[in-house]
Each structure stands twice: as structure tokens, then as C-alpha cells.
Image (cartoon, rainbow, N blue to C red; front, top):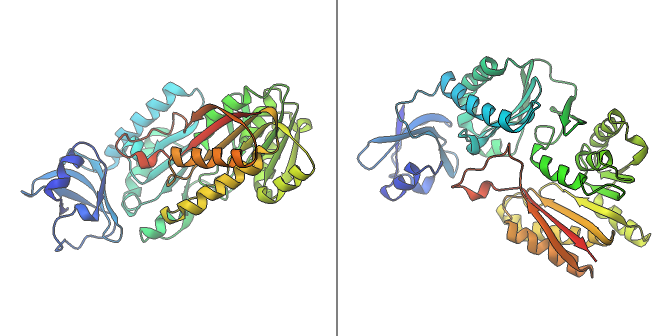
Length: 391
């Protein structure tokens, strides 16, 4: 393997477990001709190896550390050992095999996401390094879990920055059909080939459950419902009426399937609409709901969009809070990792104030326990969820 020299000022941080190597941390300009994603030794100023990772000369975040034991071979066994640890951690927390199995740096596997849907595994490879290592980790998955189907949703924009093509493939099994998910006694459905991300958002599991426990005897508006996660959960816990809104007909079709599977269709109304178009109509009609949920896609997809995205969250909060019944509950979430919890909370509370509502803050939360976060990279604390009562 080639060696990549690291500046003395950066070595200590990397030895303490920081997993990212930016270009400014690399010593010198005459580097070996490394293929994007190739495994390398990272070495100190005395050319002593202290870590193994992979390197991509095309990107600003050029290196990701896989292990600080530079004598460890990066092979199927390496991945099998990490997968076993990840699986054990999930099996301690969840009874059914429906969870995020691998959460990138949080599980010591930067650039790799794996969601488990029973005997179907949906993987996302976001770096050239994990793409090159795919034969090893696919073999390790087969050894550990013997899945009937493995789908690679390698279509995220991050791959373009890494010089990788956007593809959706099935290394094992068929590349079609939705999958059923069991959570808290409720059946949901996901589309792992055409849906958002891997087809489902496990990160909101605990937030859905908490909200559902507030829903008995209440009317609920679920904005950006996607496959019905929040709304169907609320209906299952005794909500009297649930309106589920999304701009995607295919997402609403999966939400409808979930309502039927759980015998809740009589409680649910499905609306295909743009939320920013629908809310003014609801306001003008004087409609209100006891619980309003807004879980939009990321409004801040790049750091340069932060100001614009936060204004979008403020606008959404202003509109959505106007259809919350007096004393009702307003829940809003953001998956924009470029906006901090402080930024997001300020935007939401500013929007509520602009709507003339008085808010009482009651809860903040993040992703569920199958999304472990690396303690040294707070940038990865992406999911932010806030709840208020509005007078």
C-alpha cells in the first residue's frame, strides 16, 4: 500500500480517533499516484504508519481512517468483525430485524450505510473507498446474515463528488417490489429501489412512537408523510382523524397500503399536495388540528444554502403553526446537517412568533439508537426534532 504523510500538527488528533483526513492535513505536495478510494497507510513525520484508511485525491475530505491498528488487514474478516459488533448492538435494542445495521462513522465504517428490512439489506456506498472495498463487505454480509436480497442504492449526490457513478443494483436477489416493516406492532411499507434514501427513515422511530402516544382522541395533520410513518402510528394509538399529506403519489400509495394493513383506512385521509400550497388554503378555510407534524426533506443541502434553508424552515413553521388548534401540539424536524440545532430552533420559534402564536417548548430529540454518532464529528448529528404546545 502507498503511504500518505500527515502533518505533525494533525497526527495527535487522528490518533485520538478523529476519522477524517482533510487535504490541509497532508504533508507535502509530491504524493504517490493513488487511485481514488485506494487503501493507504497514514504515516507521521518520521514515516511511521499509525493508521490504515482510504484516500481520494479528488476530494477535499481526502481520507477516512478505518483502523488505528496499521497491522490489521482490510479484508472480509475486518468487515465481518465490525458487522458482528453492529448487529449485536442492534439486537440488544430491537426485537425485530428492522433497523439501521451500519451507520457509517458511528459504526467505524465511514462511507457505508446499511438498513435491514428482515432478510433484505439496502446499502448505500458514499465514498470511493467503500466502493473499492465492496467485494469484502458484501461477502461479510452474506457470511453473517445470509440475506435473500441485497440492494445497493448507490445514487446519492455524495458519490458524484467522489468521482463515482450513480447506480441502483441488486448484487443478490431481485431489484423490485416493496418490503414490509414491523415497528411497535405496526406494519409499514418501503420502496428500497425508488423511495427516498434507502426507502425508509429508521431515524425517526422513537419520535414517531412518542408522538403516537400523544394522539389518542386527537386530530392529526401529518405533513411530508412520505410512507405514512407518523400518521399511521398516530392512528394506531387512537387518533380520531389523520390527514396525511405528501407531494409523491408513490409515497402515498405505500402509506395507503400501511393504513389498510393495519385496518386504519377509515381514520385516514390522503392528500397529494405541495405543503406550501396546501397550508395557506387550510388557514383560509379556518381548519385546525390537535397535532401538526412537519417532517420535510432537507432544506439545507449545502453549507452555502444555510441562510435560504433556515428561512424555509421559518416559513414552514409560520404556516404550519397557524393550523394548530389552541393548546395543540406542533412537531417539526430537520435532517439538514449543515444547520445546527440552535439554528433550527431559532428558525422554528421565529416562524411560530411571526404567526402570532405563543409556544411552550416541551421536547427536543434526534435520531434513534440504531444511528450511533461518532463523538468527534458533531457534524454528523444531523436529525433535529422539536415539539411545542401552542396557545
